[in-house]
Image (tube, rainbow, N blue to C red):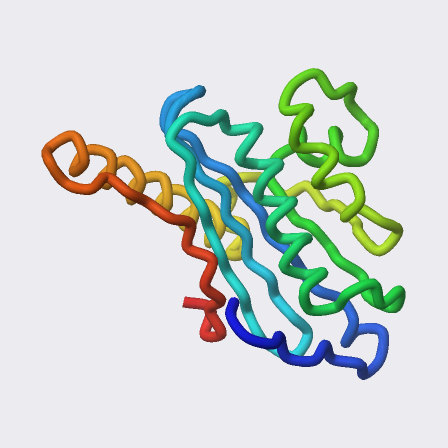
Length: 176
């Protein structure tokens, strides 16, 4: 996203809930992988982003997806207490590590950047992966595509290309 974000909608309780779909993907575990999110705003706007890393794990990317989604939400709504953020993920790990259900044993470097974002406004919902849920399917596609692009860039670099890759953090108002 560039520039000043649009104002957050302010009409009614239903107008103050944003749905954040998140997913992580990894080709090999560890291996190249990516995170992705999709934000569905009550005014109909959709924001999507994805980013990739050459050496990571699936659980790490699942957590990064939640972090990036919550950061994007905060950029738009700030600390307005009237908002509700529903994070829908197919990762039981992300849900349980971020709500205190499971003991944290790995990826400990990520939690200090996520924990402050998980306040009383944030609710987690587990959705079954690869079960036809449109929002979850979309973020899965975004994460897999980001992983594929990174792998292609690395392969091109090995063949004499530049091999560079940057996260795609552009918003997608059309949801495409």
